[in-house]
Image 1 (cartoon, helix red, strand yellow):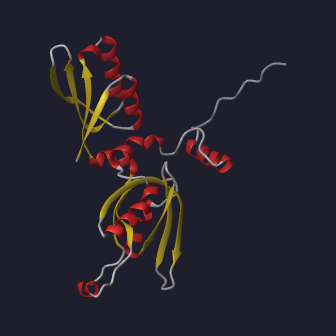
Image 2 (cartoon, one colour):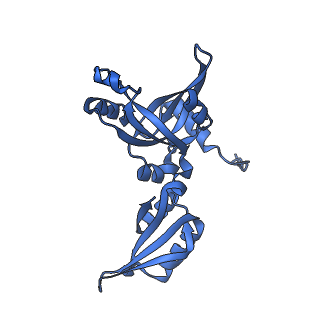
Image 3 (cartoon, helix red, strand yellow):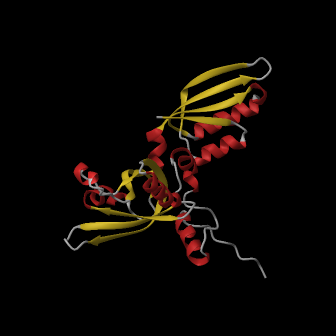
Length: 243
């Protein structure tokens, strides 16, 4: 029998839908993780994994201290409900590489953040662990206290974090790495990853001990997980400057 010819695929593969089906069927992602493309942003700007929030709340409760926390994840479910007074509120579950966490928004917070809470949105969430309720000084003097909670202060799309908080990006090259082939690959990589982040190159000569700084006026880069992977493949070390 003749082997049938496989017809060409029409359109683009919906990788996110494929990943959700994988998790639905076998309980885990197989091909990749929905947040893989944001690994750089999560490693660079998130202070904690979301499964650490409850432990941090307990720690702050015990020590009576505040703590700033930033986490990142994608929305896996969102419910909008109406309270007894008729005011809307929402319940959202976000997930990162470590697990999931539920957020509840009421009143002005619900109104401010509800547009971000679409399922599959990748989010960067900045907040603070603090007392859940404000206590008047006179009530505090009488011994009244409040439980602690993670209070969201700001939400933005995870894909915009680098442009917002990354001031500069530098690569470190030694003279022993230099060759026509290396230069060609480096130029191709910079052209393929054009963006808004200023680029600096540090050239180090291990024989003479020279370390020369070159600020690029021609290239600005988009710092993504793919860009970082390409640098690592070429053996180039890097560092970031945060705003």
